[in-house]
Image (cartoon, helix red, strand yellow):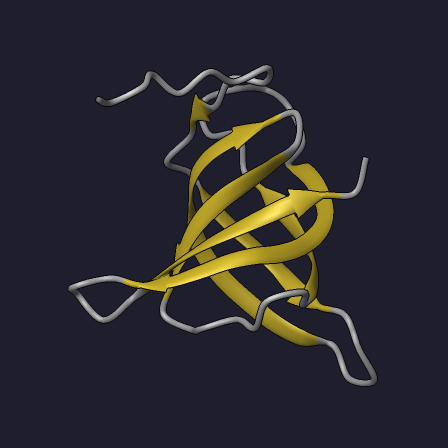
Length: 95
């Protein structure tokens, strides 16, 4: 029997470009397309695979809105290779 997924924090579809960097000894730039965002994190598609627990900071653009990019820092909790060769990366925000 399938159960409905219940979330306390609902995801908002985004589909906007994002850029950011990986924290560490040397900052490494990353690019991607944000898929969705919520109070607790976000997901994006990237051509690069990211390791679980990697800490990143991202600026998610707010296309069409007169607002600055949304800045989020968090850690990678999932990275899944897609059929097209890109990766879907899920990030848990530091809140």
